[in-house]
Length: 165
Image (cartoon, rainbow, N blue to C red; front, side):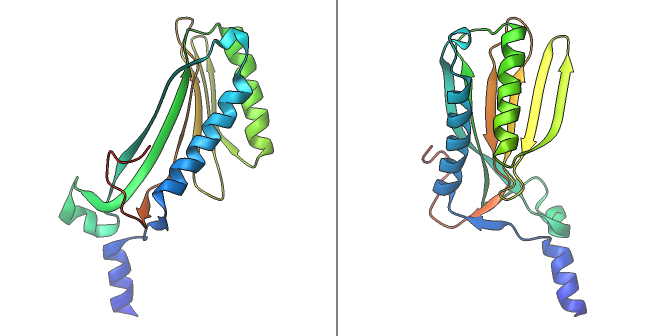
């Protein structure tokens, strides 16, 4: 039991396994359905869209023997969209309120909700997948951005960084 305990302490909590194609599709669906919900003339269409993977590091005490070295075969995934033009605050507030209502009805939990004179930021997490979602508006000259990301997962297929997306 002590050896197993030391092994777990060294290795840390194992990353959940997932098909990266399914993770990316799930994230894109979340963002796309949210963007469709935002489709209003005052928000003026899609400005950018991307998918990228992030590095994930060793966990547990093993991290210190691989300091700042990404763990092979473990990635997080992120996707985002934004409006093509800047959005006025009132339009951004209405859009973020629609997103909050839509996503919480779908089981997402609000983790942060910041409102400052030049900032609206809504962050949510999905309890089943660990995915995160963010809506961000940062001033009158800013587009409204929405993005989704996954936790780190051990990929179960031959995903290569810079691969599909």
